[in-house]
Figure 1 (cartoon, rainbow, N blue to C red):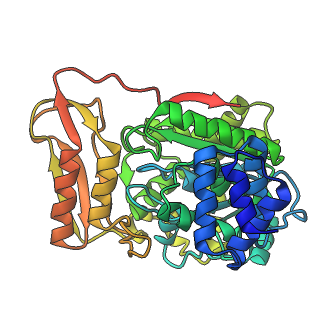
Figure 2: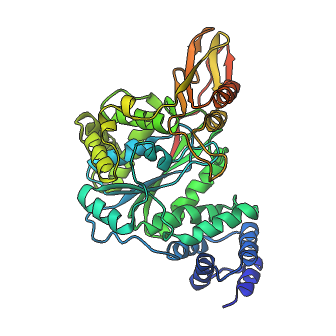
Figure 3: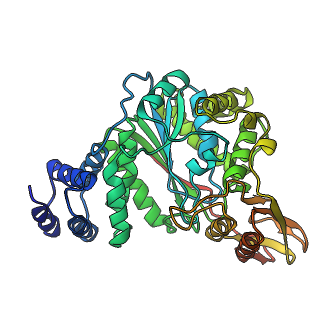
Length: 436
């Protein structure tokens, strides 16, 4: 088999076989196919597309290009959740222990933040000592004992994805829908899961701002998941403003812990948490419907079992369990703070999620480049949200950073995210559609 022939085949609109896609994925993983030929094939796929069967075949081949988790020895359905990214979206931190407390096995493989979006791994590492780099044998052992593990992608899981993702970035083929689907689902297929709940964002702070394009991605993810034998549901959620009241790694962990401890959480955060939990519990076979799953999720919080499941995970993964009892004391918080106050009277008609996300990056809470360090204590605590009525001087947010320059830059950008008006804005539905 020659890569030159495969480039020509895709350029000629011909459908590729599973064996040919496996050849490409393995060549990307082991370096036997040069970057310029892989880039040429990616461009052909970008221009001519992939069929649903090709997308599923590429996804499977990418997953099998390295080591695949074997969870056959772990009893029960294994369900994960994936979000396409957002601002203030620390839902996974509360969601995973809630679903696990309801009897679902949750192997949750997550990523790091980049650009304006936060990453679950960075949030988890804000807890002192918490280890997200788990070996496959350790993941299996922990899942058998606790039903819950939250971890990052290892070098051996779907290694072709790392190479192809970098080349997509370098060859301007990032937006190709089939390649996005293969990148997301190859890692999930490598987890050996049986169910997947997709939180697909749209709006200002989303990877794909336009609802129509985000929905196309959700449908493609659904179709490919089914071809791979994974039960899947996609929840379309708005990301026009930050979710919840916390933006920043340690700050978001604190919010999630308090919610698990029974404190009343922000309405938008709680709505997304309960809906996603309901579907995870349903796909995990622990409820007869998603609505019943939501009821069980609320009960796991009120009876304390979700918090105890979270505590158990923190202990197993080397974190300081004192944070579970007193997050305000044991979670990091940057030493410098500044209050952001309303400059005029009226309704907050805009709190642009993307701008707030980039403001958090300026504070040190995120990354402009993959190798940038993260300040776990930097970020925002919101006191007001879009639609709230304010008068001059009302507190809108508290800002945290570790240097005066970062603090000033972050505050300036946050303020540029705000708009005021005489009438309350019409809000997009938080959950616009559930695709089953």
